[in-house]
Length: 223
Image (cartoon, rainbow, N blue to C red; front, side, top):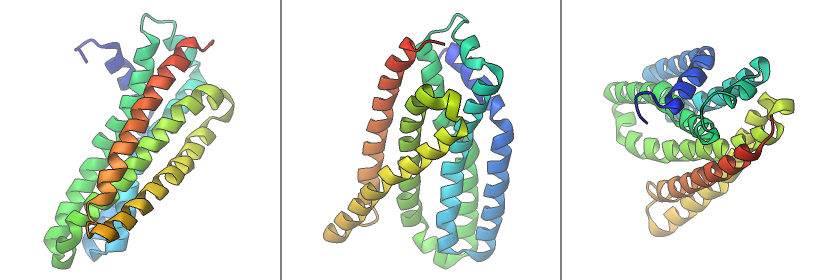
């Protein structure tokens, strides 16, 4: 993206719209991170990864739905001199950026601190981080891949329900892949690596395929 790229402008607007939602994700992430720092509990760490990886993108998607339905932003932004493909690209990039900017720094900070204070936690942190980061990243990508086509079709009427439905459908898609990865891992004694190897490529391919499909749908949509 160039310095004056329209995608950067659209992305900045979407991030500003979702800023209030991000504060919720930051607060919840910090509370869970502090609890993890105190306890070093592995089960809590799973939910900590879930919150920091999945919550910011979901809140971002809900924020973009709200901005469109409450301010007629969809009609406005296609009337200004930007390509509809830029609008779609900014949405898909925004999901990843929200996770990287809001959730990942909290995840890395408290994971590192917890491993310093809890030696038993330190021994399993890498395998836990790889497995559950790959699982929830896959859920994020599957959710985003489902959300924007559904939002174009039903967003005006369903609003936040589209984001919530996409999240559940994303989890439904991710779970069989994770179970397959665990099963294969048990077979070849690579349980730490197989879910990562399977989940990431499939979710990335699905995400890019959804982007290509959504570009075509959005370019033909009437507002």
